[in-house]
Image 1 (cartoon, rainbow, N blue to C red):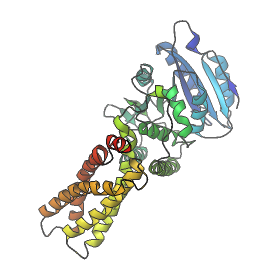
Image 2 (cartoon, rainbow, N blue to C red; image 1 turned 135 degrees about the horizontal axis):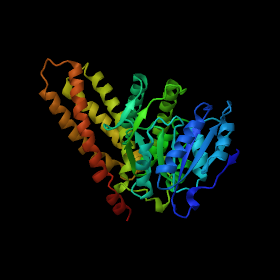
Image 3 (spheres, rainbow, N blue to C red; image 1 turned 120 degrees about the vertical axis):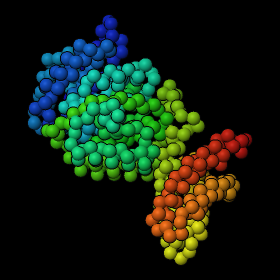
Length: 401
């Protein structure tokens, strides 16, 4: 890899904080110079901190690298790095991993996001209030211009992240993100993706460690000349989600984070437990619904519900014991199952109550909808019971002593 560096603002006598902005590019000869000059001019005029712009060329073949090197000679505080392989995540990893800035960030070369959002993105990181920051196009106050295809795919993808992996951030794909450098450098070794899913995986990992993610509503205009293969990217993202889900269930996503990072910001590991609980709950709910539907063919709705709920409750407690709360071995397993039946009874009472309120002529689909709603309420109660009572860290500590 070749790199050209310029003197950063960090050594300016009146600017003591440094922010590095990475602009990943692949065959962007037509827009690179104009975008970088515009970004450099904006930061020079308005940004109150030191900055360094790094153009990260992902193996371009159209002369992009020549333009990038020319810009480093033309503009102060601009540098360029060249990678021999494609991949936005690979480029960000390379630059962020070696950065000496206080905050690292990146934005798409088309500058689709209005630059007025950049200071609000950076400020909470430099103040120490937040650990990562992302632009979101899905906030009510965001102003977004893009076609229906991209809008639908983006919203569906973020909905999947929230429903299957318990993500709490709203927009994983917006190309406008930043993080405290020490945070990123602690998390990078555990991020596997090198392409478009890199952002999402980093954010999911950060949430799993209880780190604070600040969101900034942005004004965003779609680039009509974008050459991103939306369908292929979406499929790659789905594969990435499946891999992260497997890692979460196996407990492999936990990494050592320096104490100074204050990783455990959420009490008692809730930030680590909730995604795993959601995944286990989804599988349990699907199993329950299939079993309920099959049993309903040969028995009453109330009896089918009770049997399906009991079977899946036992499996759910066992799975959460191992994957969500990290309890292994046979010690206490029977007690955990007995106490877990309390959550089963809550779910049984709610679902039976719903079924009892339905008219006798209700269709099978109406019954199914009713038990789904009741199960959603029971799931919330189950998590609180398991976390605060069955697998309470205090009880486990007392048992060990």
